Length: 191
Ligand code: S6P
Ligand code: ZN
Image (cartoon, rainbow, N blue to C red; front, side, top):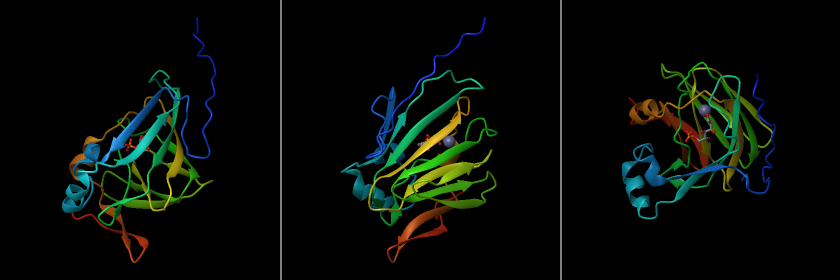
């Protein structure tokens, strides 16, 4: 007999992007992201303070099976490591064929995408922007604003995470501040 999962609802706090009833909240500090920012000296200088970079509020603890969805909000704090904006670690999906939808809720930033061959693509995310992450594209989000940048992500429950490829190779491009504005430049640590 089919075991029916009971429907459920979580409220996203639209003042700060948190999901107060989320069963899982992940915090990522600078120390959780060693080597991901392009400027090692700037990373070292900021490590004493070890700032909170982002939090993920995972609303659903559904079975990690095909057919189910997971959804979460990500709250990225404003700030920079050197001239590189605060960002998520970034990942490919372990099941690369799994796509994802991002929906902007608060603040402003960018979704940086990359194919396994290193082609990059940049999508601007503001409140109301619904951005599609197609299958096989690695993805990272970046806060270029002065306030927290918040978006909702919806993805297949069996998508999984491949962080290793990004940790080893990085993204081919990084988003840095130049004359007060974000500019995409080649990542000196890519490869
Ligand atoms: C999951 C989805 C997001 C990210 C979150 C944190 O597929 O893309 O929920 O997990 O934005 O980013 P990261 O790269 O640390 O998982
Ligand atoms: Zn993802």
